Length: 215
Image 1: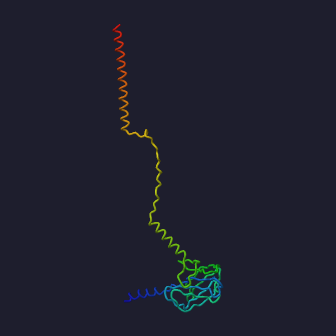
Image 2: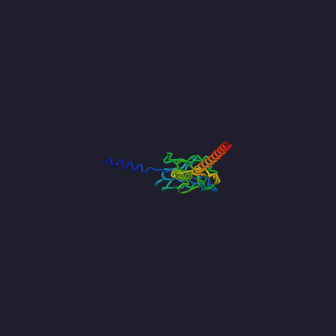
Image 3: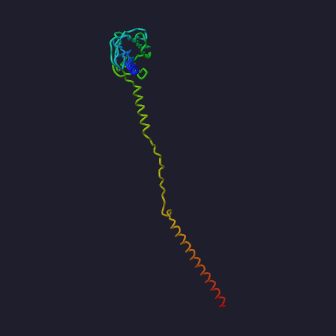
């Protein structure tokens, strides 16, 4: 029985471990800083702030109290954050729980420093809500484009040479049969001429022979 209870107790303790973190902060809001600077904490469950405190880069401390679930926004009564070389540290009973990067904010607008996948980004503030992480959105879009490109086979058509038009006259177009018929006609003509020449020669020879006999 103890072997079953101990793992269950360990699972319960692990599930209740706090994941609280500094999620977003505005050190240079639009307009006056006094009463408009704030810091946002995040925890995925319910958490009691007893024993927690915030410390800025100058060493000033603010003790927290109460409890919250998901998002908790603390607005400073006076100017508490510097616009240059500022960082925030979260302590629990004297132990450091979380800290921000040391950053600058000289914009004096509605942009804030937000925690985005282990990095801090200066993006449009989302007070008491999910951070507007541009890098994560750009990465998701890039991954989608890469996946789409990998799934689509792009084929580049091969350029075909343009056909060349050759003009031919009637004399240039002859079949093999026509050539053979032309050769036979030439042979018959040559034979006929030769036969006529032979007859003329025989006639001349005969006439000469008869003339000589008569004399």
